Each structure stands twice: as C-alpha cells, then as structure tokens.
Image (cartoon, rainbow, N blue to C red; front, side, top):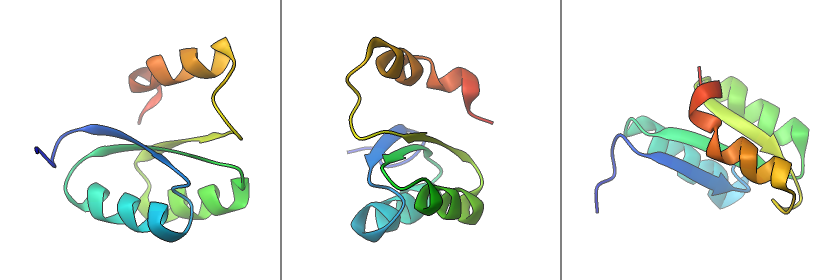
Amino acid sequence: MKLTSNTILITGGGSGIGYELTKQLTALGNTILITGRDQAKMDRAKAAFQKFTTFRSERFRSESDRHSLRNCHQTIS
C-alpha cells in the first residue's frame, strides 16, 4: 500500500487513535481531511498540524456534506 502523497479522510481525527493517525500520516506527506463532533478538538489538531481541512459533523448524510468532500481539494491550503 502506498502511504505517501494521498488524500485521506480520518473520522474522529481530533483525538485518540484518529489524532495519532493524523499525526503519522501527515508526517508521511499526505493531505488529511478530518471530521468529528467536537469543534474544539479539531481546532487544536488543525493548529498542531496546520495543513489540512476539518469538517464538523455527526455524519455525512446531506448532499451538502457529500459535495464538500468531493470538492475538498479546492479548499485545501
């Protein structure tokens, strides 16, 4: 499996195992998108890693949420 230069969605990336995955996969040069329920945790993760996109959501059910994920490359800085 190729572990570098990917775009990866991590659910619960603001804490615990998700946070550690975010940390490890960011270090390998991947673009990370995280989602979670706790905006404060995601804000702390974003401050620690800088270059990824966050989405606050219980689940991605609406068409708007799916559209945001499909177009995430345009919003990544």
